Length: 320
Ligand code: RIB
Image (cartoon, rainbow, N blue to C red):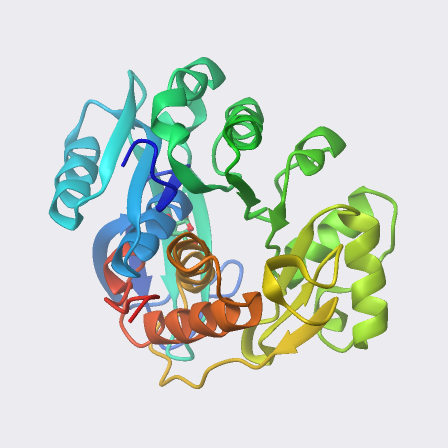
Protein backbone atom coordinates (compact mmCIF):
# COMPACT_ATOMS: atom_id res chain seq x y z
CA UNK A 1 0.00 0.00 0.00
CA UNK A 2 3.02 2.31 0.41
CA UNK A 3 2.78 5.31 -1.90
CA UNK A 4 -0.83 4.60 -2.88
CA UNK A 5 -3.39 6.94 -1.34
CA UNK A 6 -6.10 4.33 -0.97
CA UNK A 7 -5.76 3.44 2.67
CA UNK A 8 -7.06 4.24 6.12
CA UNK A 9 -4.74 4.23 9.14
CA UNK A 10 -6.59 3.97 12.45
CA UNK A 11 -4.67 4.89 15.61
CA UNK A 12 -6.54 3.85 18.74
CA UNK A 13 -7.81 1.38 21.30
CA UNK A 14 -8.53 -2.31 21.39
CA UNK A 15 -10.71 -3.64 24.23
CA UNK A 16 -12.09 -7.01 25.19
CA UNK A 17 -15.78 -6.16 25.69
CA UNK A 18 -17.69 -7.91 28.49
CA UNK A 19 -21.37 -7.42 27.74
CA UNK A 20 -24.41 -7.93 29.95
CA UNK A 21 -27.82 -7.62 28.34
CA UNK A 22 -31.04 -7.13 30.35
CA UNK A 23 -34.55 -5.94 29.51
CA UNK A 24 -33.55 -2.48 30.69
CA UNK A 25 -30.48 -0.69 32.06
CA UNK A 26 -29.98 -1.05 35.83
CA UNK A 27 -30.55 2.01 38.01
CA UNK A 28 -27.86 3.07 40.53
CA UNK A 29 -27.87 0.57 43.42
CA UNK A 30 -30.06 -1.95 41.53
CA UNK A 31 -29.21 -5.56 40.60
CA UNK A 32 -30.75 -7.12 37.48
CA UNK A 33 -30.38 -10.58 35.93
CA UNK A 34 -29.43 -10.76 32.24
CA UNK A 35 -27.26 -12.63 29.74
CA UNK A 36 -23.47 -12.39 29.34
CA UNK A 37 -21.30 -12.42 26.23
CA UNK A 38 -17.81 -11.27 25.35
CA UNK A 39 -16.17 -10.09 22.14
CA UNK A 40 -13.71 -7.64 20.57
CA UNK A 41 -14.24 -3.91 20.82
CA UNK A 42 -12.52 -0.64 21.57
CA UNK A 43 -13.34 2.43 19.51
CA UNK A 44 -10.14 2.16 17.50
CA UNK A 45 -10.53 -1.50 16.62
CA UNK A 46 -14.25 -1.13 15.85
CA UNK A 47 -13.45 1.71 13.45
CA UNK A 48 -10.62 -0.26 11.85
CA UNK A 49 -12.89 -3.26 11.26
CA UNK A 50 -15.64 -1.00 9.87
CA UNK A 51 -13.25 0.71 7.44
CA UNK A 52 -11.89 -2.67 6.34
CA UNK A 53 -15.31 -4.26 5.87
CA UNK A 54 -16.36 -1.14 3.93
CA UNK A 55 -13.60 -2.01 1.48
CA UNK A 56 -10.54 0.04 2.47
CA UNK A 57 -6.99 -1.19 3.00
CA UNK A 58 -6.50 -0.63 6.75
CA UNK A 59 -3.59 -0.34 9.14
CA UNK A 60 -4.32 -0.31 12.87
CA UNK A 61 -1.81 1.21 15.31
CA UNK A 62 -2.49 0.30 18.96
CA UNK A 63 -1.01 -1.04 22.22
CA UNK A 64 -1.70 -4.59 23.43
CA UNK A 65 -0.86 -6.64 26.50
CA UNK A 66 0.92 -9.97 26.36
CA UNK A 67 -2.25 -11.93 27.15
CA UNK A 68 -5.33 -13.60 25.67
CA UNK A 69 -6.88 -10.22 24.74
CA UNK A 70 -3.78 -9.22 22.79
CA UNK A 71 -3.77 -12.57 21.00
CA UNK A 72 -7.46 -12.10 20.13
CA UNK A 73 -6.73 -8.69 18.57
CA UNK A 74 -3.92 -10.15 16.43
CA UNK A 75 -6.01 -13.12 15.34
CA UNK A 76 -9.05 -11.03 14.38
CA UNK A 77 -6.99 -8.37 12.59
CA UNK A 78 -5.33 -11.10 10.52
CA UNK A 79 -8.70 -12.73 9.76
CA UNK A 80 -10.06 -9.45 8.39
CA UNK A 81 -6.87 -8.54 6.51
CA UNK A 82 -5.95 -5.59 8.76
CA UNK A 83 -2.26 -4.68 8.97
CA UNK A 84 -1.74 -4.48 12.77
CA UNK A 85 1.11 -2.42 14.26
CA UNK A 86 0.96 -3.03 18.01
CA UNK A 87 3.13 -1.58 20.74
CA UNK A 88 3.83 -4.31 23.30
CA UNK A 89 2.78 -3.34 26.81
CA UNK A 90 3.31 -4.96 30.21
CA UNK A 91 -0.20 -3.74 31.16
CA UNK A 92 -3.16 -6.03 30.43
CA UNK A 93 -5.01 -5.51 27.16
CA UNK A 94 -7.84 -2.96 27.47
CA UNK A 95 -11.29 -4.03 28.65
CA UNK A 96 -14.81 -2.62 28.65
CA UNK A 97 -17.87 -3.49 30.77
CA UNK A 98 -20.98 -2.87 28.68
CA UNK A 99 -24.63 -3.00 29.76
CA UNK A 100 -27.23 -3.15 26.98
CA UNK A 101 -31.02 -3.33 27.02
CA UNK A 102 -33.91 -4.39 24.82
CA UNK A 103 -34.23 -0.84 23.45
CA UNK A 104 -30.68 -1.13 22.02
CA UNK A 105 -29.25 1.37 24.49
CA UNK A 106 -25.98 0.87 26.36
CA UNK A 107 -23.73 2.25 29.07
CA UNK A 108 -20.00 1.54 29.11
CA UNK A 109 -17.09 1.68 31.54
CA UNK A 110 -13.61 1.07 30.12
CA UNK A 111 -10.43 -0.20 31.80
CA UNK A 112 -7.80 1.33 29.48
CA UNK A 113 -4.99 -1.10 30.41
CA UNK A 114 -2.45 -1.25 27.57
CA UNK A 115 -4.30 1.47 25.60
CA UNK A 116 -3.08 4.02 28.16
CA UNK A 117 0.51 3.04 27.34
CA UNK A 118 0.34 3.88 23.62
CA UNK A 119 3.34 6.13 23.20
CA UNK A 120 3.73 9.17 20.92
CA UNK A 121 7.22 7.89 20.07
CA UNK A 122 5.76 4.55 18.94
CA UNK A 123 3.20 6.38 16.77
CA UNK A 124 5.92 8.64 15.35
CA UNK A 125 7.93 5.51 14.60
CA UNK A 126 5.07 4.36 12.38
CA UNK A 127 5.74 7.11 9.81
CA UNK A 128 6.14 4.41 7.15
CA UNK A 129 2.70 3.03 8.11
CA UNK A 130 1.08 6.43 7.73
CA UNK A 131 2.95 7.41 4.57
CA UNK A 132 0.56 6.02 1.96
CA UNK A 133 -2.69 6.73 3.78
CA UNK A 134 -5.52 8.84 2.43
CA UNK A 135 -7.11 9.15 5.89
CA UNK A 136 -5.66 8.89 9.40
CA UNK A 137 -8.43 8.34 11.95
CA UNK A 138 -8.00 8.63 15.74
CA UNK A 139 -10.24 8.67 18.81
CA UNK A 140 -9.63 9.53 22.47
CA UNK A 141 -9.34 6.18 24.25
CA UNK A 142 -5.58 6.57 23.69
CA UNK A 143 -3.27 9.15 25.31
CA UNK A 144 -3.49 12.70 24.02
CA UNK A 145 0.20 12.74 23.00
CA UNK A 146 -0.25 9.64 20.83
CA UNK A 147 -3.35 11.09 19.17
CA UNK A 148 -1.59 14.40 18.56
CA UNK A 149 1.37 12.56 17.02
CA UNK A 150 -0.98 10.65 14.69
CA UNK A 151 -2.84 13.76 13.51
CA UNK A 152 0.35 15.79 13.08
CA UNK A 153 1.90 12.98 11.03
CA UNK A 154 -1.24 12.78 8.91
CA UNK A 155 -0.83 16.45 8.10
CA UNK A 156 2.85 16.01 7.24
CA UNK A 157 2.04 13.02 5.01
CA UNK A 158 -0.75 14.88 3.18
CA UNK A 159 -3.45 12.56 4.53
CA UNK A 160 -6.79 13.73 5.89
CA UNK A 161 -6.48 14.10 9.70
CA UNK A 162 -9.78 12.82 11.13
CA UNK A 163 -10.61 12.86 14.86
CA UNK A 164 -13.62 11.19 16.44
CA UNK A 165 -13.56 13.01 19.81
CA UNK A 166 -14.99 10.09 21.81
CA UNK A 167 -15.60 9.48 24.65
CA UNK A 168 -17.18 12.79 25.68
CA UNK A 169 -15.23 13.13 28.93
CA UNK A 170 -11.86 13.16 27.14
CA UNK A 171 -10.01 16.47 26.93
CA UNK A 172 -9.60 18.02 23.46
CA UNK A 173 -7.38 21.08 23.70
CA UNK A 174 -6.79 23.79 21.10
CA UNK A 175 -3.57 22.14 19.84
CA UNK A 176 -5.40 18.89 19.06
CA UNK A 177 -8.25 20.75 17.35
CA UNK A 178 -5.78 22.70 15.24
CA UNK A 179 -4.47 19.38 13.83
CA UNK A 180 -7.92 18.19 12.64
CA UNK A 181 -9.15 18.40 9.06
CA UNK A 182 -12.33 16.49 9.95
CA UNK A 183 -13.97 16.31 13.41
CA UNK A 184 -16.88 13.93 14.09
CA UNK A 185 -18.45 14.47 17.53
CA UNK A 186 -21.82 13.06 18.58
CA UNK A 187 -24.27 15.39 20.37
CA UNK A 188 -22.72 14.92 23.84
CA UNK A 189 -19.18 15.30 22.55
CA UNK A 190 -20.17 18.41 20.54
CA UNK A 191 -21.83 20.00 23.59
CA UNK A 192 -18.79 19.16 25.74
CA UNK A 193 -16.38 20.65 23.18
CA UNK A 194 -18.42 23.86 22.83
CA UNK A 195 -18.48 24.32 26.61
CA UNK A 196 -14.79 23.45 27.09
CA UNK A 197 -13.71 25.98 24.45
CA UNK A 198 -16.04 28.72 25.73
CA UNK A 199 -18.32 28.87 22.66
CA UNK A 200 -21.70 27.91 24.19
CA UNK A 201 -23.41 25.93 26.94
CA UNK A 202 -26.02 23.68 25.33
CA UNK A 203 -27.73 20.57 26.73
CA UNK A 204 -26.83 17.41 24.77
CA UNK A 205 -30.46 16.78 23.84
CA UNK A 206 -30.89 20.36 22.53
CA UNK A 207 -28.18 20.02 19.85
CA UNK A 208 -30.32 18.24 17.23
CA UNK A 209 -33.09 20.85 17.61
CA UNK A 210 -30.82 23.79 16.71
CA UNK A 211 -31.51 25.23 13.26
CA UNK A 212 -28.93 24.75 10.52
CA UNK A 213 -27.64 28.33 10.73
CA UNK A 214 -27.00 28.07 14.48
CA UNK A 215 -25.34 24.65 14.19
CA UNK A 216 -23.16 25.84 11.31
CA UNK A 217 -22.02 28.91 13.27
CA UNK A 218 -21.09 26.75 16.27
CA UNK A 219 -19.16 24.31 14.07
CA UNK A 220 -17.29 27.21 12.47
CA UNK A 221 -16.40 28.60 15.90
CA UNK A 222 -15.08 25.19 17.00
CA UNK A 223 -13.06 24.30 13.89
CA UNK A 224 -12.66 27.44 11.73
CA UNK A 225 -10.59 25.75 9.02
CA UNK A 226 -11.95 22.18 8.99
CA UNK A 227 -15.08 20.15 8.40
CA UNK A 228 -17.31 19.12 11.33
CA UNK A 229 -19.82 16.26 11.19
CA UNK A 230 -22.12 16.17 14.22
CA UNK A 231 -23.82 12.78 14.51
CA UNK A 232 -27.35 13.11 15.89
CA UNK A 233 -28.43 9.50 16.48
CA UNK A 234 -31.91 8.90 15.08
CA UNK A 235 -31.93 12.47 13.69
CA UNK A 236 -29.10 11.70 11.25
CA UNK A 237 -26.08 13.99 11.06
CA UNK A 238 -25.13 17.58 10.26
CA UNK A 239 -22.10 18.57 8.18
CA UNK A 240 -20.43 21.97 8.23
CA UNK A 241 -17.55 22.89 5.90
CA UNK A 242 -15.18 25.84 6.12
CA UNK A 243 -15.39 26.18 2.33
CA UNK A 244 -18.69 25.38 0.57
CA UNK A 245 -17.01 23.30 -2.12
CA UNK A 246 -14.91 21.15 0.27
CA UNK A 247 -15.09 17.47 -0.74
CA UNK A 248 -17.33 18.31 -3.71
CA UNK A 249 -20.35 19.47 -1.68
CA UNK A 250 -22.33 22.35 -3.16
CA UNK A 251 -23.37 23.91 0.17
CA UNK A 252 -21.40 24.96 3.25
CA UNK A 253 -23.70 22.93 5.51
CA UNK A 254 -26.33 20.22 5.20
CA UNK A 255 -28.37 17.76 7.23
CA UNK A 256 -28.35 14.06 6.28
CA UNK A 257 -31.25 11.83 7.37
CA UNK A 258 -30.61 8.69 9.43
CA UNK A 259 -31.02 5.37 7.65
CA UNK A 260 -33.82 3.16 9.06
CA UNK A 261 -32.79 0.02 10.98
CA UNK A 262 -34.28 -2.84 13.02
CA UNK A 263 -32.14 -1.98 16.06
CA UNK A 264 -30.78 -4.82 18.19
CA UNK A 265 -27.72 -3.15 19.76
CA UNK A 266 -26.31 0.35 19.20
CA UNK A 267 -22.88 -0.43 20.75
CA UNK A 268 -20.24 0.71 18.25
CA UNK A 269 -22.72 2.46 15.91
CA UNK A 270 -20.66 5.65 16.09
CA UNK A 271 -17.53 3.63 15.35
CA UNK A 272 -19.27 2.05 12.35
CA UNK A 273 -20.11 5.53 11.05
CA UNK A 274 -16.54 6.81 11.46
CA UNK A 275 -14.84 3.77 9.95
CA UNK A 276 -17.24 3.69 7.01
CA UNK A 277 -16.86 7.43 6.37
CA UNK A 278 -13.05 7.13 6.40
CA UNK A 279 -13.26 4.21 3.95
CA UNK A 280 -15.62 6.09 1.63
CA UNK A 281 -13.33 9.13 1.57
CA UNK A 282 -10.26 6.94 0.93
CA UNK A 283 -11.86 4.80 -1.76
CA UNK A 284 -13.82 7.42 -3.69
CA UNK A 285 -12.47 10.89 -2.95
CA UNK A 286 -14.06 12.21 -6.12
CA UNK A 287 -17.54 11.60 -4.75
CA UNK A 288 -19.36 14.41 -2.95
CA UNK A 289 -19.15 14.34 0.84
CA UNK A 290 -22.95 14.09 1.04
CA UNK A 291 -22.79 10.75 -0.80
CA UNK A 292 -20.08 9.54 1.56
CA UNK A 293 -22.11 10.59 4.61
CA UNK A 294 -25.18 8.77 3.30
CA UNK A 295 -23.07 5.63 2.91
CA UNK A 296 -21.66 6.00 6.46
CA UNK A 297 -25.19 6.49 7.78
CA UNK A 298 -26.44 3.34 5.98
CA UNK A 299 -23.41 1.41 7.23
CA UNK A 300 -23.93 2.55 10.85
CA UNK A 301 -27.63 1.63 10.70
CA UNK A 302 -26.76 -1.86 9.44
CA UNK A 303 -24.26 -2.29 12.32
CA UNK A 304 -27.07 -1.87 14.87
CA UNK A 305 -28.99 -4.85 13.48
CA UNK A 306 -26.56 -7.37 15.05
CA UNK A 307 -25.33 -7.64 18.66
CA UNK A 308 -21.78 -6.70 19.69
CA UNK A 309 -19.24 -4.11 18.58
CA UNK A 310 -16.43 -5.07 16.16
CA UNK A 311 -18.07 -8.30 15.04
CA UNK A 312 -21.35 -6.48 14.26
CA UNK A 313 -19.68 -4.45 11.49
CA UNK A 314 -21.36 -5.39 8.19
CA UNK A 315 -19.54 -6.32 4.99
CA UNK A 316 -20.89 -3.45 2.90
CA UNK A 317 -18.48 -1.83 0.46
CA UNK A 318 -18.27 1.93 0.01
CA UNK A 319 -17.29 1.49 -3.65
CA UNK A 320 -19.92 -1.11 -4.62
O1 RIB B 1 -17.82 2.58 21.00
C1 RIB B 1 -18.05 1.31 21.55
C2 RIB B 1 -16.81 0.84 22.25
O2 RIB B 1 -16.56 1.68 23.35
C3 RIB B 1 -16.89 -0.56 22.83
O3 RIB B 1 -16.51 -1.57 21.94
C4 RIB B 1 -16.02 -0.47 24.06
O4 RIB B 1 -14.87 -1.25 24.01
C5 RIB B 1 -15.68 1.01 24.22
O5 RIB B 1 -14.42 1.30 23.76
